[in-house]
Image (cartoon, rainbow, N blue to C red; front, side, top):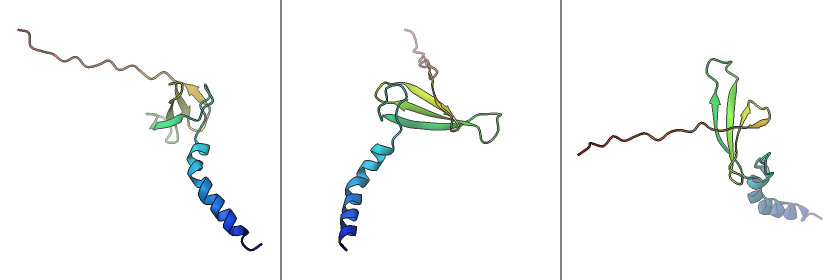
Length: 90
């Protein structure tokens, strides 16, 4: 009976590498645990406690944003045009 704590300790050591997988957020679109946190951005000119957190799902390639601790909403990131490189004409 007094060796039960060793079984518990052994199980804790074996399960601990799985915690990041189990605690990762699910994508609301495809329901897979492939949601990655990108960044948190403070909203300019707003209250100090207002910010957006951006996420991206690696499975379905959808971007999401979340205002404070609200619901995840689909977000289409702005498209950045590539800079034009001027070359001298011959």
